[in-house]
Image (cartoon, rainbow, N blue to C red; front, side):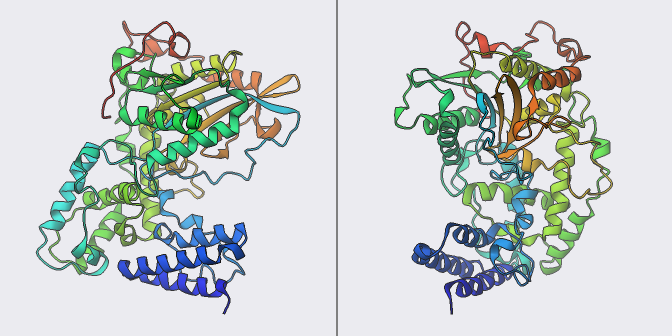
Length: 505
């Protein structure tokens, strides 16, 4: 029997073991398969290797039976649609956008990247203190159950909480494991240097703009180490640390804090219209096997978040298999609705709040002295910024009474941990074009994408964005009094000291 057949046979056994929650045996089988792949690697081409390793990562794939039965090779199976990370909102580890098949390389020999702006979310992290408190509340429910766990929760009889002995790590980057935020940022910096090396003068300092959130700052630090490699030292990099405080006004990477008019809960009545009956159905299923277990639907919803952070920390979560892929889709869309109407295009003030960052972005595009601009902040602020710019706005507001397919606003694909947005300024002959890359996939600007590599002609792009800001007055609409209303730190950091103390936020 060929290795390919043996591999697929063992993979099917592995999938069955996972479905039956026999995790110890499943792990042994996974290690056996992994060792065989390594042993046979010299006889396998790269495509086959990638296909096998993708199948092997079945801990995050809820594959239906028969997914491989009618295809000749694993590469023909569309298995990414079953990847649960796609439905964990912005809480799960980094995920490349599916994209449109557009190459991130420039196929036009007449074009060169003349400038790059990057804004990045911090790397994969541990839960926040607030989430940790809620997880401990759920954990107490499990601890107080006096019977043996059965059915889908049988693994809890021998379960160890993923934050045990790591209480000091709340709010911080993960530094170990498959989805280490530290390692992700190191890799990203190394890749970024390789991609845009022509724009960096080795005699210059690398400038990192970051909020004073500890995890944002350290993400920038690890990125810089990856970017500079052996050249890294404190004389080669400068951190411009912007305080997350309302007194910064519009001169901030977190301008929402200074906008007195901003009410994240203004659309709560609309959000609450979404059908969450699936949570009760899950609760009924789990308590049927475990009568007397005092879980609530709120706890069930919290377990989706638990799964995301346990994956960040450990690389997998035994809880991930207590939900079906349909339930992940339903809860994922609930997450998307919350994002869209609280801090995304569905909120009436996001265009206003993000306007200082967008105006600075346009100014950088026209600044011939700036070649590389690197920024680190939070997903919420990236979402506000891109909403204000008009990049991620669906044709219509997303519905709350049903799930649209395809989903036009998937938060997990836009703002996962370590998410990054590149804005490339292309020079093609005597003309300039703007192109966006979101999470390693080209993302054409809506209504303007007929340039090289599906880019937008720069003057046209600037006019489109400025038209969105015509009636915007950040100072007036956000009730800004004595604080700055414009973003200036990208230019005045040499004369103004930006060294805010780091915070756990």
